[in-house]
Length: 272
Ligand code: NAP
Image (cartoon, rainbow, N blue to C red; front, side, top):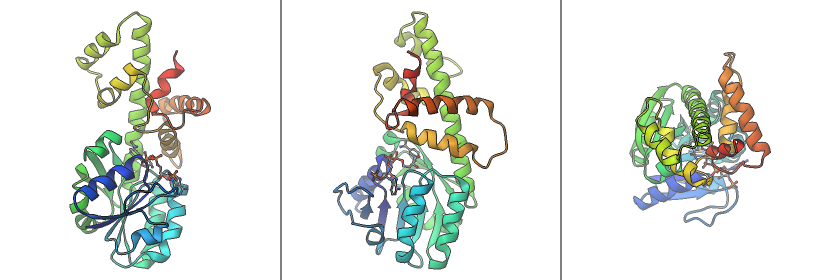
């Protein structure tokens, strides 16, 4: 398949490498040149001839900026999958903006951080027309362990934000529980052995145990992006989420400490 990847951050670069390894023709673009194979100087050049275009950049302003550069180059039948984590309104605006070009829109946020992207274990939450999804599926299935069709454009973004709220709250709970155990003189080895036999064990533990034990804050998923997602989650939503409000202040403190690019589990440092 001819695939264009726009955004060569942690995730986009892993997906591009895997598709290229499969023999797909992969062109790509990044705002700051990375010298990657198939890299083009601008988004319009990168999408030339691509059947599937995957946009995976930071946030809604980044999506809007790249989309503006793309619009004159989009051609009828090309599929644009917007995989950056944004709010539902942003994805609906993207779908509306590209409709006059004849290109087709898919919403494709995902879960699974760097290790999952490298190991083709991403889980995609898809929003949009099922028939468009079926055309993209051959390429996506080689990146993913699951592809869930959620509903019309906007719903997948809402689900993705709900999932990230859960991860952030579970991660904060894990950090506080670990801190309490350490204060009680319990070794990390005993703590994690007991946790794995406890009802509260989670996928977050599987992913972050080694980082917490080694105090390795290198990013699988950066604090700045989780902070962005928690802020997007409360935007336009009228429900009151008291624990989320509290955790947002903790993320703001981590950002103020300058840990933006570190993994979000590095918030453990707020409890020395
Ligand atoms: P990342 O490593 O921080 O990379 C961000 C990318 O966005 C870079 O390519 C960056 O370009 C680009 N970018 C930022 N601002 C831009 C702008 N104004 N115009 C154009 N490009 C811009 O991020 P990532 O971890 O790959 O995540 C990408 C998206 O996936 C985010 O929305 C994130 O929330 C979501 N996500 C990530 C994970 C994860 O575990 N990493 C999991 C699920 C969802 P430069 O290199 O030039 O800065």
